[in-house]
Each structure stands twice: as structure tokens, then as C-alpha cells.
Image 1 (cartoon, rainbow, N blue to C red):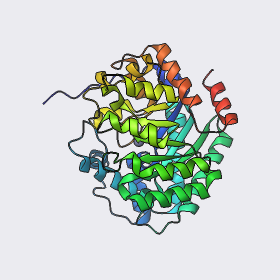
Image 2: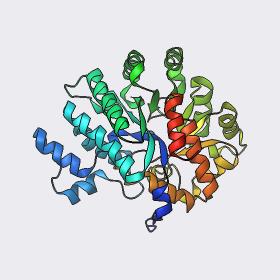
Image 3: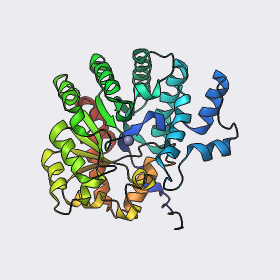
Image 4: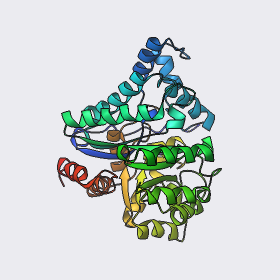
Length: 346
Ligand SMILES: [Zn+2]
């Protein structure tokens, strides 16, 4: 077996940089101490109450053996959203960790209501209201701007995606965008063309997890049929030797939300050195860097930046470009984007 990849440790300069992140799942932001605290409060059973053992069961520390392994981790985190108070606390902590721990000044947090709240007696709208008010409260106290993206988890089926899109449209004022996540191979883009049209008509910007698994043709299909403003991951686009898929992304002005460590752990790329971020930037693609699921993937934006500057081969100027693209590609309104641009020094 190959030795585990040793990640560069972020230096003081990286840590001090004010940052923006577009791709972070709330369900991937539940820390082990929080799981233990919330389970105790709700009388819920965890697979272990020993922090070290729970850490082992909920954090992916090496490239995954199977998707089931990762899904089991998500289901432990999902159980933590057991009450409205839990939704509030987890959201607040996600913002605190990003702001205090990683110096993130613009954060788009995404969540899948049907996954996160599935099987629980919690109302989607009330949960969203709570999360949105947490973001506003956090913004009022810190030099920080944030917004919420609603996700349709493709694996939960088409009816779930439609219900989720309807929910997002009805609550347009509390969400900044919509995402289609996971399962692109089994649930191809063409299934969602009518849904994307509805979202466009409602003025809700769309991002799509695309090219994380499978073939580069899926990225083409996503661009052509769904016309998203951004795509998540996109790594398979680099496998098109003609360069045509990358050129399509560039020509469409689409921002790519890259998640380098996530792509290594889910085996979307063989090694961090083979991640195409540098290639994308050199081809003129607008790329932002994100941590995806920081707790489950045992990462954060500082470590993603260190990875980008090390094994991925970005220059400091490339990194600044990614920081700028993150702000420019944000779904937040222009006032908030401008505030973030100031915080990031642009
Ligand atoms: Zn994601």
C-alpha cells in the first residue's frame, strides 16, 4: 500500500490571509465534540461516545475504500440535526469556525433539507428561517458576509429534487442559490433541465456538482442543458484531451468551485499533484478553492490553500486570483460582495 500523502502545514501567511469560500456543506461541518454534546442533550445514541473512536468513525483520513464508508460518516453527522436548537447551534459553529479558525470573510454554506432534516419532525421552512437569522446575526457582529444555498441531493430521487426546488423558490429571499449534488452518473443532467429552467425563471442562480466522478461528457451535458453559473469540482473536464470541455467552461464564464483535498479522498484524482486546478487557471478558467466538508474530510481552507501552493503548483498570484474569483463568483448581492472584496484587499 502506498504511504499516506503528507499534507503541507499552512504557514502564518496563509492563515492570516482573509478568505472567501463558495462550496461548504453544513452537514460536513459538525465537529465530534458537538456530536457528543447534542447526542447527550437529545438522548440520542452515537456509535461510540469515546471522542477518539467517534473521530475515527466520522473522519475520512485517507482515500475512501467505498462510498458506503463516507455515507456512514454523513449519517452520523446528519443525526446531530435533531432539533431546531441543534440546527441553530451547528450553523453558528460553522460560521465561527470559518471566521475565527480560517479567517473566512465571505462564506456560502449549503445544505440539503431533504437529507439534513429527513426522518425528523422538523419543518423545512422553520429550519431555514433559523439558519438565515443565524447568518444575519453573525454578519451584524463580525466583518463577515454569508449566504445559504439549498441543495437537491440527486440520490434522493427526482420528486425530492422538485420539492426542494419549489421550497427554494418559495423562500427566494432567504437563499442565495441552488445546488444539485452527488450521484451525477446515476442521475444525469438531462433529468433536471425543466427544474433548471424554473430556477432561472425565479432568478435563483444555479451551481451543479459536475465532473466529480464519471466522464468529462457529463460536464458538457451540465453546461449545455442546465446552464449553471458555477459548477462544483469539475475535475473530469481536464480528462478531455481535446481541451474542448475546459474551453466550454471558460467560454460560458462559469466559475469552478474546486475542492482539492476532497477530490483526493474520494479518488476523483489519483494524487493531489494530479489535481487540475493549475491547468484550469492556466487555461483561463475562473476557479475558487473550497474545503467541501471540513469535518468529515478533516480539512479547512487554510490546508486547501497550503495544498494549492505546494503539491498543486499554484503561485501566490494564482492563489490571489482564486480568492478574487471566489468573491466575484459569489451568489451574494453586489453590496455584500463589495464588502467582502474590501475585506480581502481587492
Ligand atoms: Zn460538495
